[in-house]
Length: 178
Image (cartoon, rainbow, N blue to C red; front, side):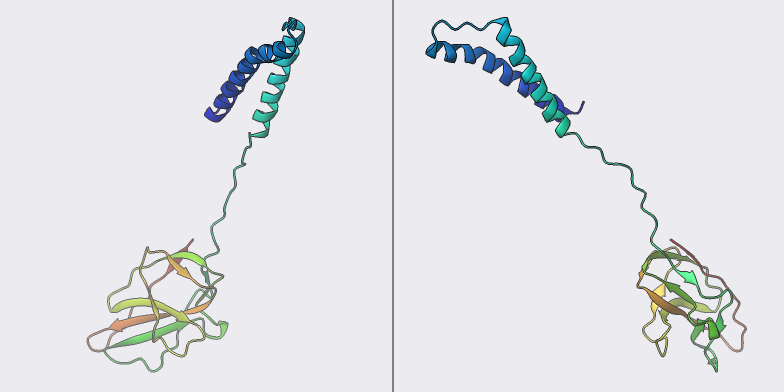
């Protein structure tokens, strides 16, 4: 029994006792020959118990367990991304990756997702930009292991790089989780 139910029962018992103690005196004031008999005491006690039961029953509610699913996260547009930056600038710059004719590199219906990745030597920053954007200017940086809230839509990756002389930038992967 929870504390409020116990308090309600004790309060009701107290009121019943006061009523039974005061009621005969009030009635006797109008009817001097009145005497509280067992015939009246039992029904009054039963009424008190029934009222308490109804009040207690009407105040008890149970909430069921509810499973809340993870919000929809980022989904891949393709397995292998395509560099859409041509020509690639010597020494450094920004590369834009998408899924070529398949469209955006990834899409989301909104919600929170967490990217996990390790940038290889030569890459300095990973970000994303709307697939409809004309450039990577203003891209939002992604930090591995940090959850991000991304609005619904399709997005491409923007990767900054910085190398000394001619180089081949290695491949890497990004894994998204909700």
